Image (cartoon, rainbow, N blue to C red; front, top):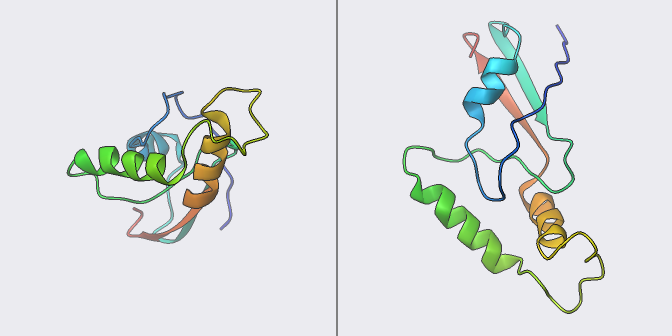
Length: 107
């Protein structure tokens, strides 16, 4: 069974955010087994799977990405949308824009 469901996530400030519950609320009932493929259309946002028991993970992931991809680098040519725009595109490329997640027991 293949089904496509499109929805819009609530806008958030930049950073790492938990979106699992919002995604689940927007999905149709899942089959007992299969694959869930998630794709984010926004060109400066990405998707990752990480621990959510400790909020320090989100803070640390943002710090790591900000260390790897700095704002206001002199070699950036795409600067017309603000200091954080080109870094956001690079960070989305590093994290990826899609995930494929196995469905087991309808979850």
